[in-house]
Amino acid sequence: MKITCIIDNRAGFKSNLYAEHGFSLLVEHDDKTIMVDTGKTPLVMRHNLDVLGITTVEEVLISHGHNDHTGGLAALLDSKINIHPNETKFYMHPQALTPKYAVEDDEKRYIGFPETVDPETLNREWVTENTSLGKDTWIFNQVEYQCGFEPIPPYLRVEVGGKLLPDKFEDEINMVMKTDEGLVVFSGCAHKGIVNILYSVKEYFQDEIYAVIGGSHLMNAPPQRIENTVEAIKKLNPGVIAMGHCTGFEALCHFKREFGDKFILLASGVGFQL
Image 1 (cartoon, rainbow, N blue to C red):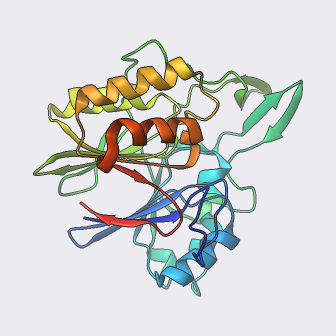
Image 2 (tube, rainbow, N blue to C red):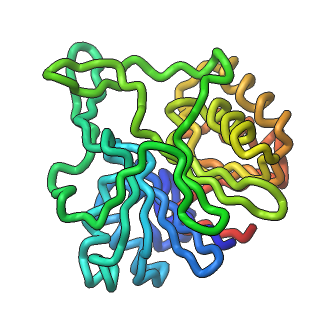
């Protein structure tokens, strides 16, 4: 399995790749190519795909509707970037299209699905339950609350019936791949909590967690939550933990201290094999 980080909040100092507050991974496994999320802007997606020499994206999983995961989608609809855009299949939950906002100090800021993309033009498949994508690959969204220290930030809202309500992230989906070493779990932002996700995956598939890859939304989290998260993941004893995007600097440092060589810092252009 080959994993390439297309877009992250950071890029190497000597890299020709762009960074932005966004996230996108490309996973190549068993003749299948799946992109997880599309970053925040078409500009960065277009540039990074060009630098990396990627010309075809077969399938795209949209982890949730926030624009730092959906904003680069338009680049994948351009045949100059993605050779067969009409054949690219998008997997998403219907509620990913629900208007989403950040509300702070009585001011709201739109952070939802790009308004420049007509979702009706996408070759899409709605996903509302755990769904197999074929051999050993699953979309997973049945997350149970396994711990009491992963609250969803109250400033994240969704517009329903003209009202801004707390976002429960019913649209959030993750990807799970079964391997001989165990389960590989891909998360976009883990708004429902990375611990909740991992323990729900372990319980559902009745298998061990081998790798954790993606964002964990620990930026600006209290130190105790970071400590609790690291300790809970340590109990799972994963062989690989690759984190980036919304994980936050303090949490990334903590993961590195605790997991050592098992830890991979995600950045635009970082690639590794499992």
